[in-house]
Image (cartoon, rainbow, N blue to C red; front, side, top):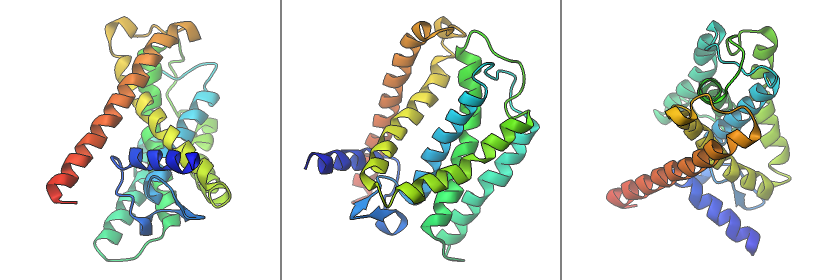
Length: 231
């Protein structure tokens, strides 16, 4: 019962971000994920890409801007979501949750790169002036985010639907907190102030609180829109 209540809470958390239509969501063992297949891909794709970039550049976080490769990746990896979404919504073709998941993962990975760069450039006291994804190894690791996200959800989802739902709920909070961290780093007192875990504590807590506030705002806005629409 406690597990069901937790999943219900996470489902409510996702209601401010996603339509949560059953036919466009993964449902395993009567457990529907708190986000649709496309949004599931976006959030896991974002998180995996951010983590992989942080691990890859851990000794010298990148603060030199974004490489030309990234701008090409925006088109190659971001366009499939737009095309798949528009053509299916307009009735030109049908799509599947597997396609939604893959295109969402690619789009989420693309979104993670500028957030990673802004967080590093705004908060970290030191870092490399090399560009993000300016190296071949970085590009390979970045592109691996898409199959990694797809395999993670498809392989573990049917076996561990409760765990995947819990991770997805936690992921939502993490993504909003990281996005907030990019804004917190622009506050003069925190600008390039982080050099250790100790100095990262205060901006980290503020980012977490701001992330929750933004998340609550999106939930309230979605609820208000639904009420206006009579849902």
